[in-house]
Image (tube, rainbow, N blue to C red):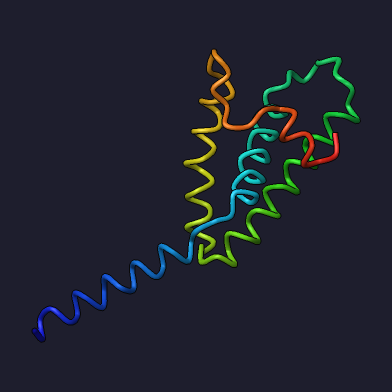
Length: 118
């Protein structure tokens, strides 16, 4: 029994930290959309004739969404390091989704644009 107690305590601690990292859908959406806006604006050609004020609004809005999501994630138990790792993984997923044919993105442009007042 004495050998089982440390294992049980470890399991309980892991379960507690995992549940502490549950993130509300609203914050997950903020992060997803913020990352998507970052990817989209980074891929615009330097000589594009897109309205630069609109590009700045999307860029700044994306950064704001990521910052807002980061605050929630850190308050929910993520560390700076675990949040950074999560962003790296999510960025790859978001990039795959927004570049895939067949509209596989988790959120639409319209849903994300509404978050930044577009």
